[in-house]
Length: 417
Image (tube, rainbow, N blue to C red; front, side, top):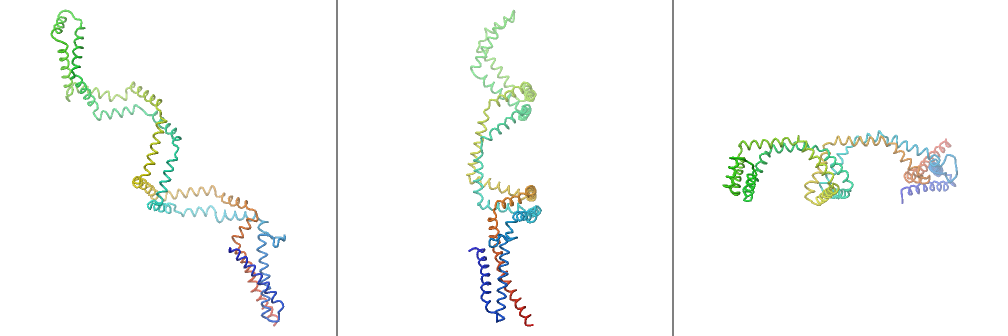
């Protein structure tokens, strides 16, 4: 049984007691005590009925009779609800009171220790991991591809090849690439010259050159003498040894011809970024590469691999312990170290939100009240304050009973005097 039902029955019982008491004492008035009780019961009955009428008149017409100034709440519904909304907006939940209360709240001091405790004890860890995995899994990669592709193309199209060549040339010079190139070429040339096939080719080429030389007199006689004395094999061997000797000489550091070659190579390397023809060719190659590059599939494959790697790492307990949990704790530590700034920012945002939307509090209450019909609203009020209203009736009967006894006693004393 609800408290409202109990108090309502108690109010009814009080009226019944007063009525029965008054009827029971009415035939007997020869005793002072009976007259006192009769006066008390009479006044208690009148007081209880008056309070019953007053309480009932708040919500409906007593006994269904359209008595003036009754059913006050239904007849004055608009004024009552407007007054309630006004009090709620301007007094109980005024902007100033809410904002002053928010200024005293330290959001970080309340949230950070709680979240840290949940993470370190593991009760929140599984939820965080599930949330991150769900977030990563639900990322629509195909919608990210156009954006990433655009950024890559913009970046590549704005790359200055001149600066890249300058960096490359500086790197090559700093690492003595000029000497390394020369040594590599000389080594390859030495290996090639030492081959038997190379010697034969050199002899054949040299002999063909001699045969094609057109000369008169002594020069012609000398050339014919050489042809008769040297075969292709001997001539190839002579040229081979001559070239090998030159290469060997160039391989020694400090040799003048070597230093001249190194200087020339270095000069060409340093001038790469100023070579307009080279720059034009590289730019043309870059643009052609960009236009022919199937960037959509490349970006999509890369994103899929990244997504798979992240999900795989989230299933690795070592990764979680070594990276994820420390990362979360470090982030919370950063929040805690900047608690004043963060609290102030949160308070400012909430204050601004309240400033812009405070009127909606009253509008929401008004809207919800307008949705209720009279019977529903009266029932809600009676359910919430019905107990106190019923005690008004009980108190009316009791107070009337006591006052009735006092007045009857006073009346009796006056008659005796």
